[in-house]
Image 1: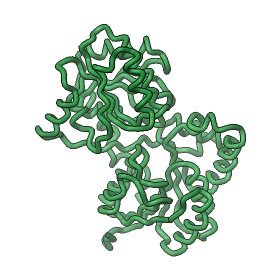
Image 2: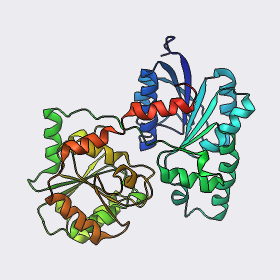
Image 3: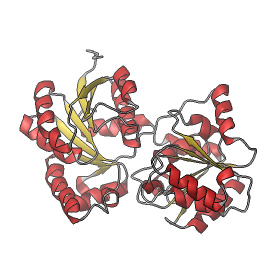
Image 4: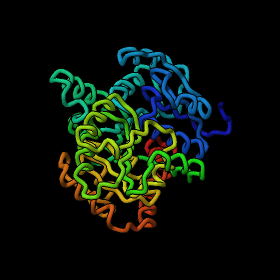
Length: 369
């Protein structure tokens, strides 16, 4: 519902609300913008996804009814001519290339700020030369029309600059806001403990079961652990689950691997874990690392482009291992399970990524601070 007490209006454009990290980041930013007395509308190419009811309850949600990227330009032009917000914040290519063009065509006078949340050169590495050329051309045009360009890590900003053939000084690196998860109650803890089952050490990973997360690497590293009473819990869902179950059986660890599925509130699992592990091939940022640290859980991560090393400050706050090295990952997991963690220090580091910090930086770039 619109609150006329809000001082400025911000439109946030994203593809949909499927529940991925980028969508959650945008909603968390929106909440902080509202806390700072701004009115928010969420523009969606397609009004679908498990986070849609949550967004509708808190913000004005507009379905642009654009099933394909090619349908977005005219739909967004029409909406901006009607709505005329004070600022437009856009996340995820190709929206980040299309929206600045739409703003020009609509005669939009507000600031257009675009943000990327992943390493696009890696994300689309297997799409072929023509697709890669399309990315570079569209970014080269659209990015130059934007008023500000944001990468969620320094690595993402460098990737954006390279693809768009622009100087790195034209980009701002703003780490993702990571909201504090609620402390789980006794019932939630009991349900999480039921998933874990045994009394052995508990290793947690959180994320969609897709190729970029490289869960096969994690399963192989887990199989190498010398302590055979530990449990590995995968919190997330995806089309890769069947293959991962087959691999776990092949490795002889199926009885110690828990496929817990998707849970909207992961806090009980963080609260009951002994170690958090991220095995990704690349990550734009890595919100789940911060979430784990906020519960005082020690972290082991692959040193993948680009966020984990920035969050962990090159190993100061957790262990980093080479991408794809199961032996190194297993050794780091052994060390993480056997070394006492400074839980308070981890929580303090997690607080560096509080939503209000990122929101102030975004608002400054939108000219609304």
